[in-house]
Amino acid sequence: MSAPLRQPLRKGFSTGANAAAAITAAWKTLNGEEINGPLPLLFPDGETRTLPLADCAPGFARIVKDGGDDPDCTHGAVLEARVSAAVPEQAAREDYLLPIGRALLILRSGGGIGLCTLPGLDCEQHKWAINHGPRRMITDNLARAGMREGCWLAEISVRDGEKLAGKTLNPLLGVVGGISILGTSGIVRPYSHEAYIATIRICVRSTRLSGFRKAVFCTGGRTAALAKTLLPEYPSISFICIGDFIAESLQSAGEQGMTEAVVACMPGKLCKYAAGFANTHAHKVAQDMPLFLRTAERHAPLSGEARRGILACSSVRQALSLTPEEAHLSIYRDLAAEAQRQFQRHVPGLPVRFLISGFSGNLLLDIPPCHP
Image 1 (cartoon, rainbow, N blue to C red):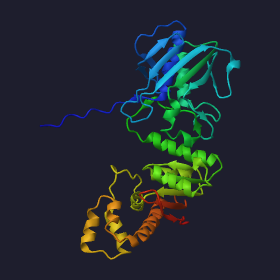
Image 2 (image 1 turned 180 degrees about the vertical axis):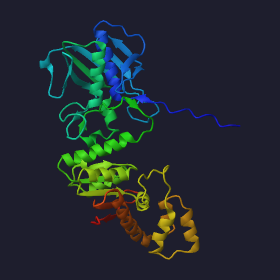
Image 3 (image 1 turned 135 degrees about the horizontal axis):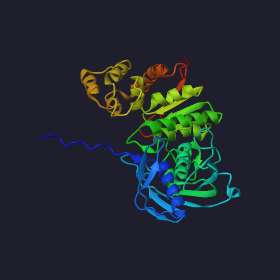
């Protein structure tokens, strides 16, 4: 019996595309146009796609973000737009003033959208966290809808946006009080890693622009908590959660002229770094157990049974249970030294310090950089 055909993953629409749709619909209804059914929206690639609206009234529109098959915390977020006639003097410092032909749009957060407080982002410092791509989609679609003259105030809000922001990197990026309105293409591609890597690069750039020249790359929550405890003098912007993307993170540090990278990780990631893997996701690469075995044998006599057991292990944690505990720190030191050599392939000349965390978040070793 043949296996059922796997359905392709469904694309969705970014918060930026949803914001543009809601504002465009609100302006159209304010000017007497009835909207029945989904709203046609122009995208940066020149294509028109339709987005379903949840509600419309004169000067008001509500939309629910459909992120497709992408596990983003903003999937299902409710965005609301209100558009009204205004005068330029109504603009606040945080607002954007966007020309549309001879018209002027004041773009403002109505709640749930954060304020950008640090340099280096795609939104201006001290203004609402609405990136350039969504701002362009808003103005392009309003122009297409007939906005030519006058001054208009558009307020876009995200229900529970501040709560949603706690599940993102916004606090680390210096975006306070809500989520960011994002989207370069307007399309959310399922399970894409591009956005995560782009965020890492933004974090590194923001750290450098803040005047600090050291980046702390943390593989997860426990390693981040440990690093922040051990490095209280480092600014919060310098602590960057990188997940599995070690190569891109180091390359970004090199591109931004960082003087040092600190890598906070656990033994499992450390072994993958020593093996030279650029992406350490469990679905991408398995542990290099022969490497672990060779390293362990330098520091402890192992029986044939232990050697076979280590080679059959699927995790470093499991392999460590087959080696004498007194050898563990020496194993970590050797793996870190090899990882430092491997990192030089990605960014020659970048010193890398290791903070190696135990499985409970305790510090096992602090290994200083090996300056090339």
